[in-house]
Length: 175
Image (cartoon, rainbow, N blue to C red; front, side, top):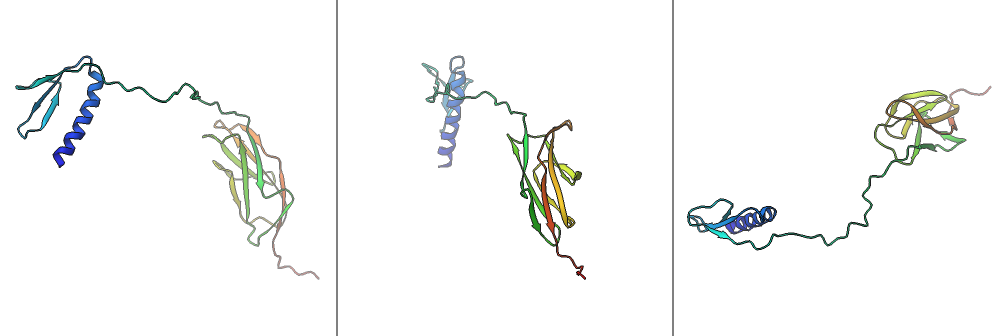
């Protein structure tokens, strides 16, 4: 059983390899000591030459002429917008955490970085995605915006500023 499977696999690979060289190479066949048929391109004692009438060629049945295989140029006219939090939203979190999410159009390509600004100051380092978490934001009104930098560090897009209000519980009591 194992010899039969190996022979079939060997024969399949051999016939595929011979289809490439069928017009120039000669093929010989003989039986080895175990009685298994052996195909080769070099003659052996007692081998017979296999007569190949026409090369084994495969034609595609799929018409690929309708496919658009030209590389698509990525438009470098980038836009970025902050989608969370909404403009003039109130964020209620006693830890001062704010989740910021941005949307970049048309497509975010490798090498670009995004910088988040909180109250016109860069927040941490630029990163390669548009999800940020602000920590320990003070109570009150704040403004955020995002900028996209290309691989040379040039600003290629900036979002409109978004204002949000951080609401945290105060321990101060009114008199």
